[in-house]
Image (cartoon, rainbow, N blue to C red; front, side, top):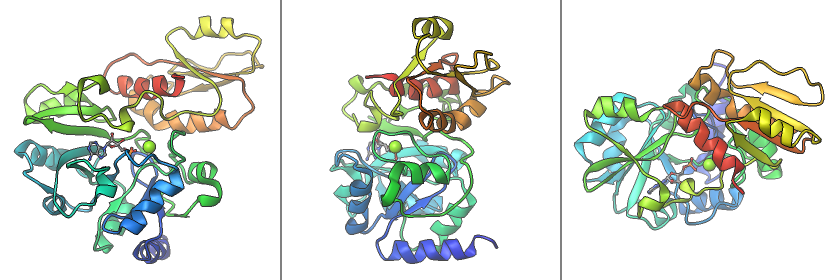
Length: 319
Ligand code: AMP
Ligand code: MG
């Protein structure tokens, strides 16, 4: 096994309260022992993450859920059975031993079982779960390749468990319960419709202003490149308005234009939402690394996973 030595190294570091960057199907995570406050604090320092932004706990089996949360609704088990391992995070009532450092003082804990063979192997070999936010500086673009972690964290980069590019490419769908009713707090590659099909009931998508569960993942400005960024339904008009600038253009599915002054990228020539999600952050990282004055990104049709990609594009462009 090519990766055995890396996994052993990751285990050694994590047991010493060190951080390790881990691959998942969503984005690379900056992982620490969930049961060590010393280790968890290092995540906040390394990312420069505000202390009020809670962390997702990553587990290797559905059975571990009962050791982290209490009063788990039947619907949560149903969703875990259907979607785990996979990009769905469940927000549940926390067990008393879960540290405030993970939950940012909340009575809830967020848990998911990631779908990446390397990280699942790692988690199975550990006798503690891992907390892991995205492995980037706070408020910057999430990493979907090992080199993005290095570029974002610089000399704070920990050991990276290299699992190749992330297959899904955007953060997990987050779902919690209010008065027993399922609520989506963040859209990802698992759509509202897929969740409703499993639960056989309507599920509401909550906007930050409508809930007491307001968390920084729901704040408007997030996931931003350093280069000014504009998400729009009318790329041609935006290009005209900024024609004198060095532009990067991100199309959803159109082929690149022929103006050699501009850098063109296309998220999915097939017009596939999942492919667009998988390519999104890689393209943003790439264009952000070129000397551009403005990146113009075309919004996707606002439905299903298209809406999840749009959510990231709009946050990247809000000032
Ligand atoms: P990420 O930064 O992608 O790891 O996602 C972390 C996000 O998960 C936070 O910004 C919150 O939106 C959500 N989250 C984590 N823990 C909790 C919690 N205990 N209660 C509610 N939301 C949470
Ligand atoms: Mg993040």
